[in-house]
Image (cartoon, rainbow, N blue to C red; front, side, top):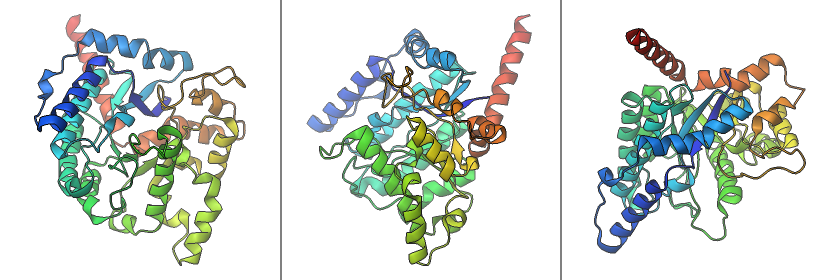
Amino acid sequence: MIIDSHGHFTTAPPALGKWREKQIRAFEETGARVPPDELRISDDEIRAAIENGQLRLQTERGTDLTLFSPGAGKMAHHYGDERTSLDWSRVSNDLIARVCGLFPERFVGVCQLPQSPGDALPASVRNSVGELERCVEELGFVGCLLNPDPSDGYYEAPPLTDRVYYPLYEKMVELDVPAMIHVAMSRNPAMQGTCAHYLAGDTAAFMQLCESDLFKDFPALKLILPHGGGAVPYHWGRYRGMMRDRGRPPLEQSILGNVYFDTCVYHKRGMELLLDIIPAQNVLFASEMIGAVRSVDPETGRRFDDTKYTLDSIDSLSDTDRQAVYGGNALRVFSRLDGVLKARATAAANVKEYQK
């Protein structure tokens, strides 16, 4: 099974964006709340969005399953207060659950967390604990997105290793689910979103982890750095040297037991570097389709985010490592995934038997 561990509902029906605009405007103008049940999206609208987008590309590229989350840039945690973020997260996650219900063989949910910057951060972490539990236990999700910068471009929050996040990590370990560390939009004009803020967020989060003892406190915690880890593989020697200068344990000992990287790298030499530097057991196949880059690479004639095509072209990867990257690692890191898929298969078989 080829599992794409990084997909977002970037093609969501327009009604979702209109509800969000109304929510933000109402709070900013009067402090009013827009009820989540005002959002109206039909199953047919969801089917059209998925069948003409992600499902079509899955079929064309030969991938089987996508771990699917709300649009990362649209998380936009700086808007409103912690209640704003909670309502927005619940609306977004419920929509993902509907996608998974309509296409159970193709999508499994990964949830957005209701984070907020500044003084609202502690309360929003408590809300994140509750929303994560709801999504995992009630909606069948297998992971979450964790924003290292809920101020969206200004880093007005403590590092992810701060104890303010510990209640969330405790719940993640209890539920046995990983978090993909993924920034949202950038409202900082000096930080373009997808090519500056995204990659800088990955890189900064890695260094936060290097400087901490987080994994001593949470040895079972699992975190994923998307976009190939930003600058991390390219500067692996710098990180190794910095840790040695500071008397810290080697990265293989202190980091790689808990941190994973995905293959959202949109050229062959970059993906080769990732797989050469990072052990294959720490790499998850991913494409981020339909996401940051949607055009066709004139050098290959394929879309930049067709990472399966790129990975298939790398001959240096052994068959065993290739199978691990394509699906085995995802089943291990997202340890609830196998159970979710088996439960869905059983339910589908029961329906077929009943219909006979």
